[in-house]
Image (cartoon, rainbow, N blue to C red; front, side, top):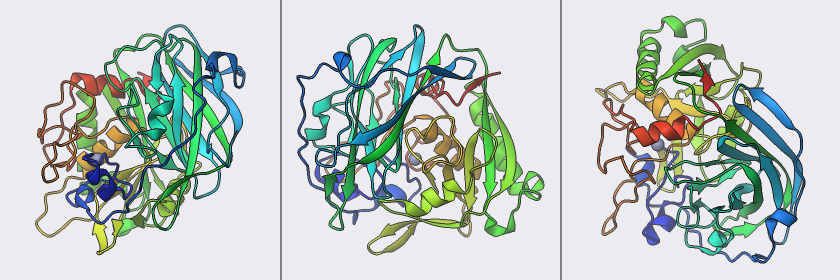
Length: 410
Ligand SMILES: [Zn+2]
């Protein structure tokens, strides 16, 4: 994925699956190289008979239920948590597992997830596979990507059938990345929660967005609602989501985060920016910054946007990955794509991968897990390098977005 692992993925014939977006973001070739690591597993353990018990459900909003599994210890030697069990209610149509915490250098991912009906959503052995521990495609019925400090896995995020209701078994894996960009199992204490969306989807939904102004280009919360560029961007954002029956409501706030953010494997600057959004109303924080760069070996490269995950944490404000960042930087003569860029990052944040990653020599570009997103279609919102006309979402992309607990019935 675009957490600075391009070269490693390219060697494996795997394309970048990015949260870093823009003409330059996914074409970096000097990213760190990470070798396979081998993680011991006890595949004989029956998760249904082991691990922590289920805690009481905490209603969040209509149709959404949160299960807090409490603090969980990751074994320092294996990086693995105990097996966790959560009992999801009948009618659960999607669930998001969010893991938060540990030290700053702790990267997190789900190592095992068995659904209530029995199918493995995440196969434990994936940590021995080529994409591990960064990105699970082949070993995951539903694709997931790691993140530092906080990670969310969503199921389903493709049209495959799975029964979530019942006892789900989970296991979390933590790892650190050394200066040579090698991954190593790492321990720590993390919080794990599951947000379940229950019942049939409403016909219309609301997505609440907080536009967080960092002072970039002198645009404050007082100015933004009348600023012509922001007004146009918000209109484009609302148009794009209206096509999938989602009404985007926008609030404006000044935050203290830096308007200059550098993206690297640890993304400490990004987490600081997202933390500056604490205290905003419940909604997805969208940070408008002056400049976003990728810390490439040859020097900083501009990128248009970053998401705190694919998806980002559900219904949380101020967390280490709770938000998206979008650059206001506009080159001379460049068409303004701000509204599309915000919508694209929100697409990631709600669970959408790129329809297709950029091609590399001799390799077939890696597509998403959806069957109705055409390869090379630049008019799709989740085209890897969003253009001004990249606005469409397919029926299956709509279904993924509608699985997000961020959507509230209208
Ligand atoms: Zn992207």
